[in-house]
Picture (spheres, rainbow, N blue to C red):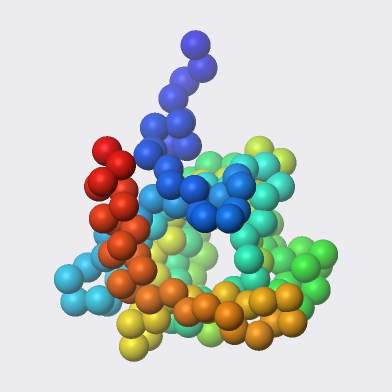
Length: 146
């Protein structure tokens, strides 16, 4: 029997409309200063183009986390192996993906005026802004599915 991995022990919720992309919200602090979540990418799966509004810290827990340019989705910007820790001050746009074996990452995100990230449509226009309250709903959804 293969050893258990984080990816096999976490209760994952599929992002609606994105096969192979999952999340687990760990925390939304009471003062809306921090949202922490796990994301799991199946091999080669990409998320929607988006911009992190506030500061983000990322730790790759399993696999390989790939970062692509938002305006040139075939241009690989960064490859992050398991154990890689990165941070940025916000206002960063990209497309994230899982490598050949997928990826599990920890995201620690700081909201700006309650906003976490905005997603883009095919013309790179903002089509949705995800807020702290969206992540609170994610926590409630996870609790209901236990």
